[in-house]
Image (cartoon, rainbow, N blue to C red; front, side, top):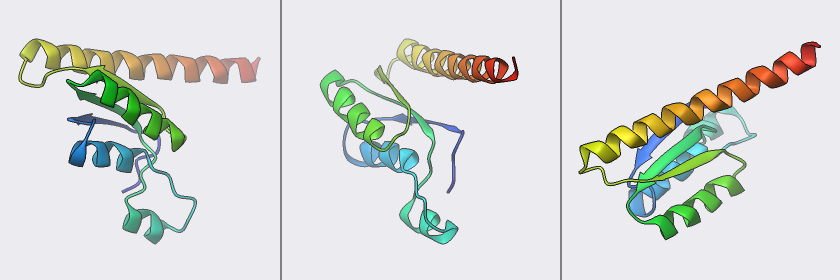
Length: 110
């Protein structure tokens, strides 16, 4: 699955399957397409959440080590208000990234 230039949202992303999923979405491969698929390399930007802040920062460091961008949002998915905030923060983060990209492209054209 190649997700370069896409955004993945992962809940429970600080340990176990959630952390593995967040890392798999972030991984990039310079190899052949079949190697990318076989090893799960995706290259996505990753927004992930959990209720544990310390582990969230550790996971963010691991994701950034792959060269991917990420955003950790502390949230409890059993709380509707937290889920709304998580989604809003993810959307705002993506919008900011798009604006920054557009500014870089505009500067190149000047």
